[in-house]
Image (cartoon, rainbow over all chains, first blue to last red; front, side):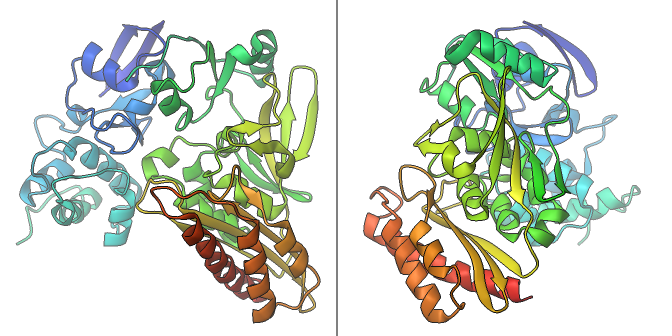
Length: 162
Length: 288
């Protein structure tokens, strides 16, 4: 089946079997390998992408379902050579160790901050509860999202807090 | 993991969906949120020949009160239900249950109609709908019928739906004033299925219980309605003794299996505890 969709702002097309999962289309056909295959059983969130702005597990969606949609992957976070505030905060706060869960964590967090620019720690933990980190790095992940929150709500960044 | 090959159509109207189902019968399977179906297909527990994707049909996702009912469109995502102000203000058992379903990413896709049609005994919406005395509107290319959820859920992964039929809407009786409800769920971690969960809905009338609804999750071959407990409460005064007896009857009605989540004995004990706590919470809300 032929599909056409926007991925990170660019028009992309594919000719795929209906059974091709979105994650395999993104990684295999488009070569965007920032989205990861973790559990492959709808549990871990390493394959999280934004589908029309909403974080979903791309291992549990057929690529044909995304026909005509807007997809954002971790490769689409950076704009004009500048890290997205959420990426800068994960770097600053050591919000990753092995990095496998990080793309999914950042996309889920980015959607949360778009929806709620000043989330509480509970809001953050709740929003990220479908993304699993096995380096037990949640404390710094939460810190990173908290650090990115003011940057998201105020367009002019003033550098990292002490 | 890859599913077996299948054909795929994504109609734009309910009529086209129903015509496709009529033509293909049990070869076809409706794809709604896909958060249960796609994992089952990847494990090759399900291998439909044709997937009928209903996600492109407009107008199937809504939450609104009209006349005597709360109407919920079959394709309403669990995230929308989790954030619905209407549910928070008037349907606490639904407002409690929505955020307890799986995890946020799955809730962004998963739908209420898909959950009911999937009929997983560990699914949450079935028990909630049993407690509320809800109905489903079911359409085929030639017919439309409305049946109580108690007649929809037949057995594990088995409903009374014909392969040519589709649930289009869920109808919950409007909750009268002095009603309250709760959904209590024990899960080992976010995203796991329930070890035990209980749905309770109470309506008071002049200090006595007018109607009680109790649904049980993951403790039988389907979502169970604790009818004996409901009957014992109807017309009774909402006393600690009455609640204790109802909780005992609900536990008696459950038939859990021992598994990795706990022993049958433990789960029965938790049904009793949760129904008791759930009734207390429902009563508090009903009294305002």
